[in-house]
Length: 520
Image (tube, rainbow, N blue to C red):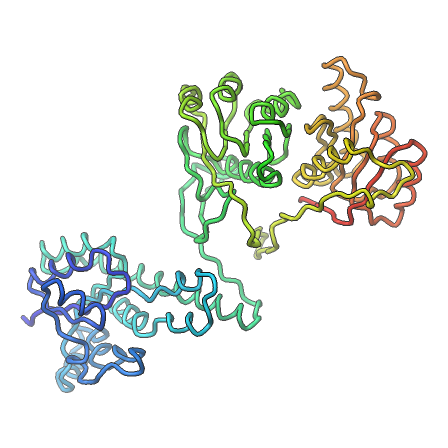
């Protein structure tokens, strides 16, 4: 039986020397290229250079070295097909039984700031993908290894049986095609962006975890993570405690993180249920923000999610502990806080990267037979006094509250109305078929919350925020009945004048932002 041969040509040299030494100890002959051969020679591994096999030198600065019949014939020939074996014998081609290849670091190169097109192109591997595909096609006879994590498995099978198992070769073939597909997709995306092409969309996600079920128990579900790591992401969050996240947990937690993103370093806390905030507040520190957010709606937060941009302290943990919560998310927990919260077996505690991000993120939503893509709505206009369209002008205090409300209402399902005061929500009206309905819910909720504090809503000086324009003056009239003193809304209705007139009649200050925040 002819001596088995392995061809080794890798960019990532992790664990390579030990792997190849193991092959050599098992009686295999090693063929290597360029830098791979140099590393192996330096570590006492006897190798044959690729040029010795092909009889042709590496040319074009190494761009051409393995694209040769003595490589691809050796990989593609079927061992059970006599005509194939005869062709190899006639042309002096020896078999290659294993290919160990991983590719030039194209993704890592383009991720570096300032990388030029010329630099990126030189990291497009040609020979590597060709060898992987040839070996993978002939998996029945050839072992293809592209992941250093597979070295131990492959080597142990060779040491035990003289070759890999057939089922292993099939699995490694699939991995190789996945590897080349991901590589080509990355290159295609880069080149298409440079060429200004957008009629194709390539997405790459890795399975993060299987889920028990989807929105309901009869629906299968999985959670996939994007290759690119971004802040405010559950895909890269660190779970410190509690049972696995469910599909609905992930949806809700993601919505909560998008609200937290609005407030940067300003101490902020939000309680959330069914992707809508039930209580949100800013404070002088995390403890005050939590207290205010909880006081905003003690009922709805039951079984909800809490997210804060502050370190969770022991004092915060002690106040959260008596309440039934599904998840608490923060950039960090003190050990004392963990000691308190981890006594609740099922409470999920997640540390989330909350540093600011400058790059635009895309949002994808599946529809039957298609996919919608849009930029994530991370823009929020800073309110200014000259946005006022009414005779009554807002006070500084009202401006501050409207700015807070404007940042919250964009994350409430449309039609959305939020009523706020002193940096906390008092009423949230979400997802109604008309804006008057949302306003009625928010105003009624605010009235009940203030009554519990012994405050007359008409004297509270509340402000209102709306995610979309008022098509009629009726929402302003409703607001006036409850003593709303200032309103912020996008404007843009053909009947804007009705809303402005209603606000003027009731001495309400009104701002038009010119930007809406529908959330479907």
